[in-house]
Image (cartoon, rainbow, N blue to C red; front, top):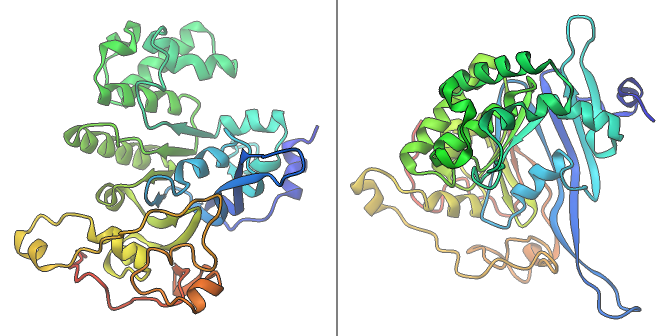
Length: 361
């Protein structure tokens, strides 16, 4: 069994200040096998993506439903097994031990157990992610019990501390999830994720199932926790208004690929990929004059199948400027640096805009 120290020497180096580095991550699902001699078909949910999450910051993955965002989140933590690629995670040490690098994709069972103390996830549905038969105290203390941390009194004290941290009362500890609203249930899920003092939290659409007013409260809570505890977030979302509020950097996914990635303000001010322009055009602007004067991009075609994606650029079947026949159908664009800090995978960038959208600074 490989120890974390041995794994460190085998893991790929990551720059200082980076807590998570994903390299060429791929996840395929077997969907059909017809006959003994026929070739198996695979759905490529994630198709060789790479990105970094810096310490204390938030990277958001955005895109339409089915683009592979949630699959990426689960593969990063190995809640599902990745097909290939590396997931290099920096586990923060204490005063006596420095940080340790672990390739989660290749980690042993013992290493994965250690990783779970440093990286946690908050799921989309606060109802389905909480056991209705358990009390709030049992739900939040479950990670402590699993990792054999503290005695019963110490765990109860930690639960009260976490409830206070997420804006709930200590008296809520003896209630069941059915007694709470959706926003309160999600706060319980966040408290559970914080129980082991993690440094990285993956947020898989944590507010999409909540009312708009409650969304703002939970997002503000996440922001406060990040500032107070120095947390790093990988934020999965499809709502660009939410992404703009929480992100440091934004990566846009389409059919298993990252097509554009940049710092938040840069991406919203100067989108370049046609798909990013289309997503931006769907975001309502709270100014009727500007809203009436801009052009909406409607992607009319259906999303292609991930079992048999289009040749060349995967977006070409829905792209309003695709050149077919031509490079769009013959060559898959690589994710390259378009400008400092701005990555793009497109043969025909659109820096001057396609939608007449007025961006906020």
